[in-house]
Image 1 (cartoon, rainbow, N blue to C red):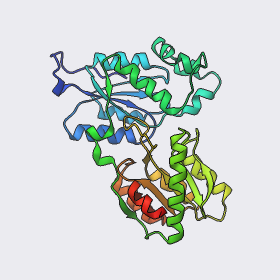
Image 2: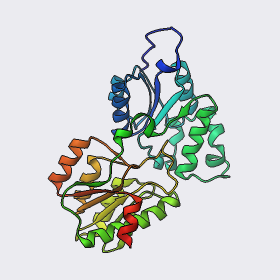
Image 3: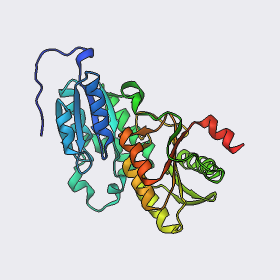
Image 4: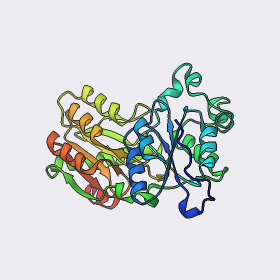
Length: 301
């Protein structure tokens, strides 16, 4: 579906729509709602098999692309007058390793040129930062700049403190501190941003499968429960993309795995559906704490 522009009048920078490149999850809807509350028009491009179709109801313009439709996304944004955009929502990278993925997601010529070093010639890696940086630079060359979350929706970033549940025990604090160091190391290698810890032992590390499956795998490996989940930003986190995000689904995965603690990084983690999230944490008996780098240093001391 494509929603046509309501006006053919020239656009000034102040009334240009903000582009939204939308992947999986509730994050794109939260961004669209935040932009609309600020008086912005939203021009959305949803990735097939990822974005919520209801997102179209929040956008003045909306259309779909396959996973390889970067050229089409650029053309749509330019047609709608977009110069600034936000990237929101998870992309299931595992699709790139499924046979025949390109038949459904139809990489266009722009995508082929941009990603040929990774996908065709094997001259570059397929790390998340490499792929996402390639997307950002490809759009930028066409006059469309992706912006960090802080520019339009800083309210979605979680503040430090105990958000829900009981204060952590000394044992849990040690697991958080240990998990923090481990997660930062994994993030620095661009492997994943989540680790599951018990008794200062790594039970599971997030890789290509994503946070929820990582947590559920930890539950399978540690049937006695008591897992602490730590999710942090990468040491050199680019806030334009791949920002750590937690929501009710994260809590449900922790509960299913027998976990009792979720620790995230303050000011660098997106918290979705804030009030509902806190209610779910209390209902599921999960303590949620947002820590800053400085406080982790004190905890480890």
